[in-house]
Amino acid sequence: MTTTTLATPHHRRRFRFGTFMVYVVMIIITLFWITPTVGLLVSSFRPADDVKTSGWWTVVTNPEKARFTLDNYRTVLGLPVAGRAAPTGGSRVGMEVALINTLTVALPATIIPILIAAFAAYGFAWIDFPGRRALFILVVAMLVVPLQISLVPILRDYVALQLGGTYLGVWLAHTGFGLPLAVYLLYNYISTIPRDIFESAFLDGATHFTIFTRLILPLSTPALASFAIFQFLWTWNDLLVALVFLGAEPRVQVVTQRLLSLLGQFGQEWHLLTSGAFISMIVPLIVFFSLQRFFVRGLMAGSVEGISDYCSDNLHGKVTLWQAINNVRVTTFCHRQIG
Image (cartoon, rainbow, N blue to C red; front, side):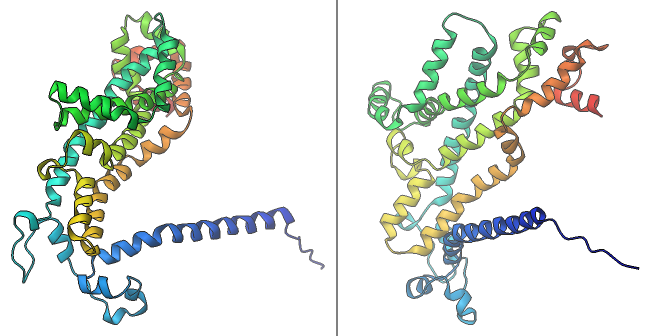
């Protein structure tokens, strides 16, 4: 009996080779990308003498002589270190105070523009009023205006209004700088919802405010979370706006200002700078990984259309979509219908 061996198609072999090369290139790029970060992380745990006399890679090439300590992080956080006097006055780094100040700035500066932009995006997308298109174009045009050219005029107004050096002034500044992008992103997302859903809601007696709070916000959760990540990271890593409108006093310094003062105060003490940098990275990483699934969904153009289209198909059933929203969230209702 003769057996016939089938040859593997060339296109399949080429596909496998191409996939293999893609993974190789991705691994190489990843290694180049994370190597400096790994070096900083290792340096943050090394004693000061080791950091000054040898490179971080000696931990890998000569592991038997590697030493690690948490004293760098204790010093940055202002905690007592064994064998040293407790830091006081100017010798105290005070990073924990800077973290609290940064949260005080970042959280309201993220929530306020999201609330305003969500209302504005809904109005531009679904409320017909005179000058709507011109106002929207004006808002989008603000994206190309560099914020640096507005710092001095705004600061003069703040001085006249006695808002300089206050958290309210920083919140308003971040809100104004973030609103154009927020309105543009949320408008593109909200405008993709089918009109049939709104017509059904209006027939059931719903107002614009009710539609916005009961329909638009649940459907727009991915887009809101995506912009929340962008805005939070922007305000958390900001140095210029905080330095101009909040000032440089130690009691109001944010994390980036505190890191800058570490550089000027301690000079070549790398171990403290790297430790402070990694402490400042903890909160943004937690925020990003917590909202990662919403971030990916929010970046997918038209991702809301799949849910909206399916829900709009149910408008001719026994219950309208708006009646279902009055009992359960629109997303839960749609998932139940699909199931």
